[in-house]
Length: 122
Image 1 (spheres, rainbow, N blue to C red):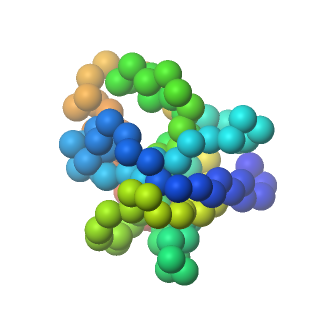
Image 2: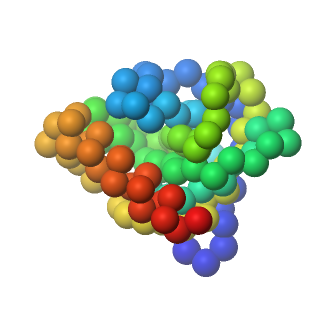
C-alpha cells in the first residue's frame, strides 16, 4: 500500500475480546466503499486532536467467529474509554494478512508479535 487509507467514525462497542486478550481496541464500522485489503496494519489515530501510533486489524475476525467487516485499532499509550467518541484512523502499512488461528492463545501470541514488529517500525 503506497498511500494511507483513512477510516473515520464513532467508536462502537465490540465483543471486548481485544481487552480480554490484553490489547483493548477501538471498533469502527467500515464503509462499504473501503477498498483496503483485510489484514493487520501499522496505523495512526487521532482522537480529540491527540495523535497516537497503533495497530489495526481490518477484517472479519475469523478466529473468533466474526462475520461483520470492521476496523479494530489498539492505540499505543492511550488510557481511558473511547466509546462514543469520534476517531480517525490512518492505515499506514499492512504487515500481514488476516488469518484464522487454531486457538485464542495462538491469536494472542501473534498480536504480541505484531505489536513488537510495529513498534520497531516507528
